[in-house]
Length: 183
Image 1 (cartoon, rainbow, N blue to C red):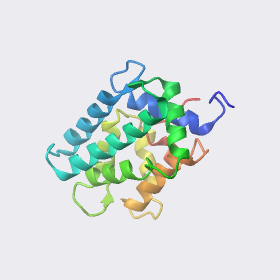
Image 2 (cartoon, rainbow, N blue to C red):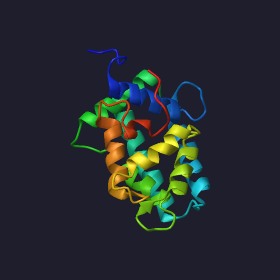
Image 3 (cartoon, rainbow, N blue to C red):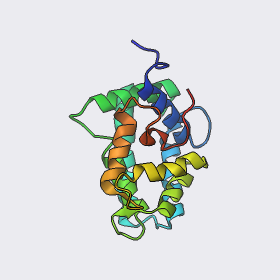
């Protein structure tokens, strides 16, 4: 078994852990996701009683429950536990698919003009919600726009999130969702 240092997916999940640890305490717990949800809602100007807000919270709650199911009784995750729980949850395709439900809900929040695409300004708010100021990450927008129409479609966005969780490529556009990955 690998220690994760050579596993590109573990490296990406470790990077996601850092972005998800919104209070910087070295652990991810539900309050980190509550802060992230609030960042989305505030950034996109969405009220908490909006159906999109409810869908986003429900998707993150399902994701969090699935991670908790993988770690037997802890209520916060260290980086190692976060990586292992995500890997285990991702391997069980019979249950919640984190690379589908959460991104669908995020896309619905991001698509402020309801045109079923994400513009560069809408994408910038997504990066700000995650605390990413890396200009390289904003430039990834152009690469995620695989049909070069100046917008990211739902399919392009969901596909990129899926690639983040499954592709071993560390330099692919999807791998840079949350900024440049340091090995």
